[in-house]
Image 1 (cartoon, protein in one colour):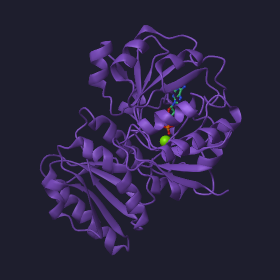
Image 2 (tube, rainbow, N blue to C red):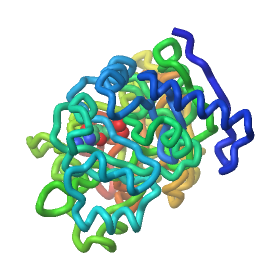
Image 3 (spheres, rainbow, N blue to C red):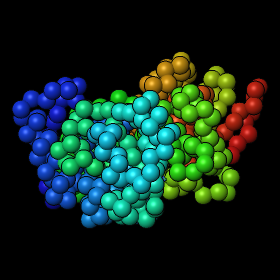
Image 4 (cartoon, rainbow, N blue to C red):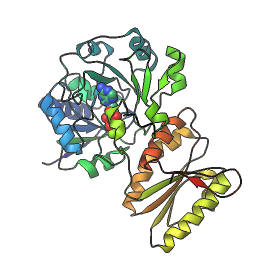
Length: 364
Ligand code: AMP
Ligand code: MG
C-alpha cells in the first residue's frame, strides 16, 4: 500500500482551504475503515474508526501490537462521550472540566457501541479529548470516534514527529499527517474511574498532584510504584516492554558529578568490549561525559524539555547504532514521575543507585 504524506500547519487553528480538503480526505479514509496517523499534543497517534471492529484489527496489525492491549478512543466534543460510556461518574465530569481538552485519558465502563476489538476484550473503555487542533478536526471529519494508540511499531518509542511515524508505518497505512513536532512528547496520563477510588494507571503530563487537587487523594497503581510487586498492571499495555531502544540502557542515580564519573568508567569498559556507547545527560554535566555519542536531554530543572526530548533521543541512539546506553536519573516529582516511568521501562528497570560517597549498588 502507498502511504500518502500530507502537511498541515499545526499552529493554525484556521486551516487553509487546501489543508481543510486534505483533512476531509483523511476523515473519509477513516470512515471507510482505513488508517491515518496524525499529530496530537502528546505523541503521534495511529487512528482508525473506534466503532468499527475491522479498523481496530487493522491498527493492531499495522503496529504489530498484541490485541489484548486496548486502544484509547479520542473524541472532539465532551457530549460525544455519552455514546461510548455506560455510566459517567461525577468525578469524570470534574476531571473533564479541569483537564479536557488535554493530555488525560479516563477509563470508564464501556457502552454497547464500542466493539471489544477496540477495548482489547475489556468491558471498560479509555477516552480522551485531545487539545491539538489538527487532531480535533480530524476526529470531527472521521465521524467523532478515533481509536488511536501511539503511531509506532510495537516495541519502539512513541513517535514525536512525522518522520518517525513514516519510518515505522510507511506501506502499512493509508496516510500520515505531518503537523510538525509534538508539544509534550510523552503519552497521556491514564486514570481509572471504574473502581471505588480513582487510580492513576500511567503517569503523564497531568500529574498526581494536579489530579489530587481536583479529586482529593488519587492512588497510583502499585505496579508503577513497584515494578517488582508481582501484580499484573491494570492498564494491560503497561506489562509490555514499550519504548525500548535496541541498545541496552542503564539508568544511573546519584549525585551528578559521581554519576558522570561512574558512567564514564562503565563506558570505558564497554568500549573495550567493542560496544558503541551512548550517554543521555543534562546540560549541567554534559561536558564531563566521554562516549561515542553524547545526547543532551535538556537542563536538569527543565522537566518539560526532558519529557519532550526523551523518545526522540532513544530513536536517535538506535539510528546511530549505539549498543550500550547510560542515562542520568531524574527526580520523581511532578512530571518527573512520567519521565522516570518511561525511562525505566525503556531500561527494562535496570537502575544503578550510587550511595552518597563512592561505589554503586544496583538492580542492573
Ligand atoms: P497507547 O495507545 O500506546 O498510548 O497505549 C494505551 C494505553 O492505555 C495502554 O497502556 C492500555 O493498556 C491502556 N488502556 C486502554 N484502554 C484501557 C482500559 N479499558 N483499561 C485499562 N487500560 C487501558
Ligand atoms: Mg504506545
